Length: 98
Image 1: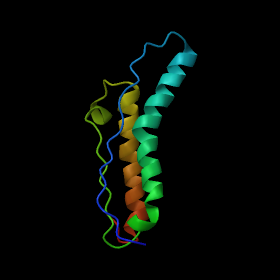
Image 2: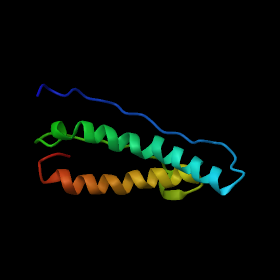
Image 3: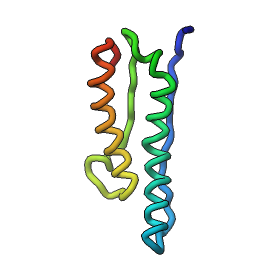
């Protein structure tokens, strides 16, 4: 494999629509989770073999709303990134990645 260059992933946001039913609320939360969490998961999976080497580094950025709330589905998604980052540290750290 060739050298992997630094990659900046910025994704996310909030659906922002007003849910008028449980179904709409569900769809809104799924969209927010997909745009804020799954984008990071998919990119990390694509780069997995390149990250799993000594010196590989992942930097995940989130939001203060993950810790303080106030953002509904956005806060929940950003908190999920924090938990997932701890999982990554545990699984990738043994391979020399940060």
